Amino acid sequence: MQTPTHTRNTKTTHFLPDLASTEIKQLQKETADSFDLSPYFSDTLKNGNSAPELAIIPAGKYEMGSSNNEFGHGKEEYPQHYSHIYKPFSIGRFTITADDFSIFQKETEWFLRPELIWTKGKEPVINIRMSDAYLYLDWLSKQTGNRYRLPTESEWEYAARAGTTSAFHFGDEVTCKEVHFHSLFPYNEAKEKRRWYLPKCAPMAQALEVGTKPANDWGLHDMHGNVWEMTDSPWQESHLNSNRDGSSDVISSWVVTKGGSWFDAAVHSRSAARKKRLFDEMDTNLGFRIVREL
Image 1 (cartoon, rainbow, N blue to C red):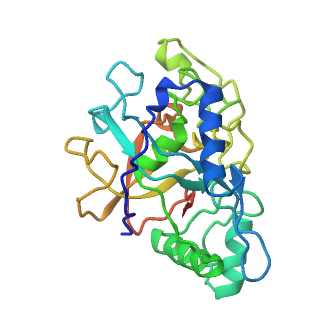
Image 2 (cartoon, rainbow, N blue to C red; image 1 turned 135 degrees about the vertical axis):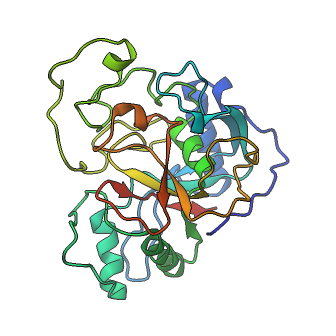
């Protein structure tokens, strides 16, 4: 697996939950300015097309995982602990789409197996293995001259939270207006132990186009729900003995995925939720989001 090199930032490390929403956005802008970039930007490919849009994520620290009083908390999210992001990075504002992947497909003659379900347009690309994601990332790196990779689990959760400590970046309650989850398994009703008979939103057995749901304070869409997202972190049964910079010394054929999906209950789309997947697994509810190093 690709493991990013983390360099300690000698400047003051912000504890993101101490900052207000306006300060979170200002920190993003200041970080972008330090790299002579906009908070949201795209690299240019050799063929003149734009690479997927990215958002600048500042360095900082936060509490990773969940406490046992968060509804949906599982033992795999224990213990809640401080995690440090020492280097700023940029991450895709959206998961990689079928349109994004089709450019790579045409340029490299990557083979699409005809028996698999495939998406189109701005829908998240699905039914690809992690090895295919690596091929795409290597291609992007060569096309742009910048290093692209998958996020670590810690980077992903840090980016998803954008300074928040709640179950979701928008609070501790969720409806289908904010997240695309399996409508038969809502969050608020289960949390309050209320009976429900009919879903409050129409069941949809597929992912939505990216950007359909509201963004967090760093401009990232669909961090909760729609499709599970690959990370480059090997699976551990909990956060016990986790490195505080988000790196991992574990070797495993399982990897961490984050974010939940249209196929899963809303509880699995919380910021802290995590699920293990085989390295060579593919699914109709599994996609990925990219990181571009700064």
